[in-house]
Amino acid sequence: MESYLPLITGGTGAVVVMALWVYAFYSGKIHSDREFSKLEQENTQLRAENTQLRAAVETERKTVDETASAGQVTNQLISALTAIAAGRKAAPRGDLTAEDLGL
Image 1 (cartoon, helix red, strand yellow):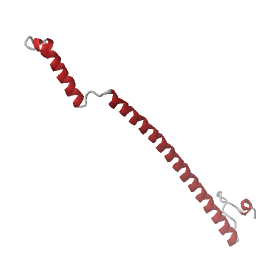
Image 2: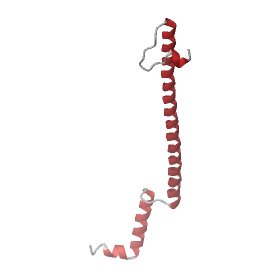
Image 3: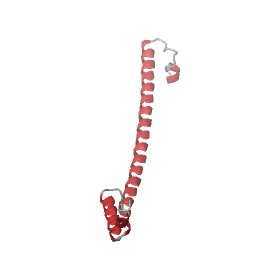
Image 4: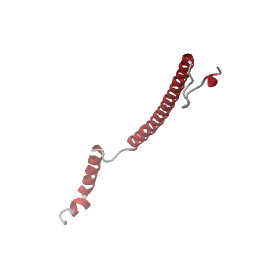
């Protein structure tokens, strides 16, 4: 340990510390304020894009659910109209009846 002490505390100590700092900076272990600010801006932009994507997915889910509901109503309506045209009563399982259609 005594052999390293003069290197650290002597005139070459500053050179060694500076060399270590330069190595750490160029190897990516230390970042400048400009790089950090750039990463913060990129992070903010990614969060905004993520929020927009989540909103778009939620809108798409609502649209698909509404389309499926409309399809079910259409199928019930077709079943009721077919039953009326065939002259028989619609099934009482929740399908639309002639009274529901105003007939």
